[in-house]
Image (cartoon, rainbow, N blue to C red; front, side, top):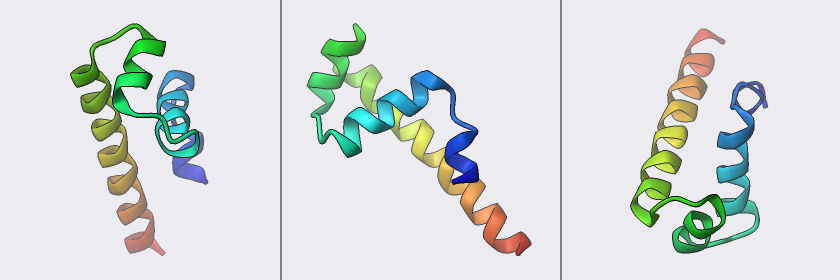
Length: 61
């Protein structure tokens, strides 16, 4: 939860739409006014950052 709380409102919204609302990248892109590819890239980068934060927290514990 600590890692998720560090996300900006826009980043959290992208993750929520994609994984909790189960929207396609095309739907996310249309809602956010961006290209489908841009939506994919942003979500991928957010997930990579979360993975790094989580692995760092696990190693520190």
